[in-house]
Image (cartoon, rainbow, N blue to C red; front, side, top):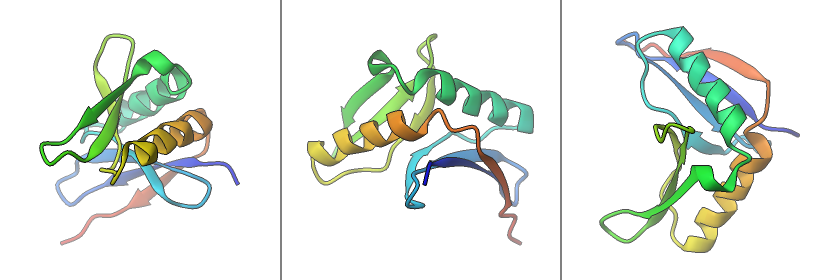
Length: 114
């Protein structure tokens, strides 16, 4: 099964998206956006940029755990991965975003909580 994007709206009416792999694992998270149009533009940017090696920034957190960002052509971060236990996990995460990032399936999920 191919991956998909999920758009979430939180209790503060902030909108974000995640990219999920075909096994339902979250492989990329966006920032919070003020509007649905901005979140949809972020998804379009992932769809455009996820296949390009030069759009991935491999990083390490202060505790040494590896993670990555996906960046747009202008250098803006459009998505951040989870923290991984090892660089090999991070590299597998990048491969999964490359495989699933072009997905055109977008699901809107209401996550508003009181």
